[in-house]
Length: 344
Image (cartoon, helix red, strand yellow):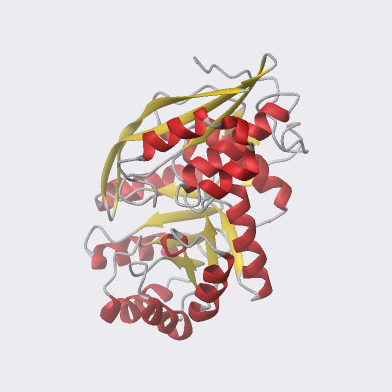
């Protein structure tokens, strides 16, 4: 068995705004395992400034993994506790290697093209007109759930934008989620959540920066708006710490991004603990290429969660790989007849 890795730069179709800044490109890495003329592929998608494994020795670790691929998946996952994106890429590559079709990792009605996954339409930050234009496009495209990133422009303008959506579309028409990416200050967050709650929002993701456990616990207790933890889960790798975090904060939801929280194994641990504490969850991709998105989508389908998932990011890039994944009427579908065009 041998392994190699490849770097790839994804280019955004248009600059995409978050409260952490504007994204023009996204760096990602692929692990390719070969054994007896069979190939397995996995994606290690890091997000600069957010992933716990955004560190100088990342490529060195990838090289070490490829040199030690003979150790096998379980042993390597233990060694990679501080590198969740490599854990995810490695899990995917081994699943790919063992599958009849290297891109069908979790066979199901979804991979046969018989079922779809409801997803949220993602609205990127920008000026009011740009955001409104995106919202109209998503509604026309058949989305019944929209997720809007907030926290980068004037809060009053964001409230006006949400009001204009609600004036036109009721809760029955559109489920609205907002994602603050930790943009609010702890001492002003509750007041902002009260103002946001008037628009019948489904939830808000990560209202304050991660690591402020007491403040976040207080918000989850007092907020009139359900809170979903996102960045808060990054860097928490042991089952004991995961249990402690969810018991302390007691959020209404958690959001799972396999590339950022230890792949499928790490995500399953979060799900088990969340369900034990009656905390709901959904899955989101983290700007992977279609290789990583394909793995996450197939896994998400077999979990059986009926909520809209955050899996619509594959169409953001100009140089993504042609794949069976496509969006139709606010759902993600898999067209088995469509071939891949990977060039490595």
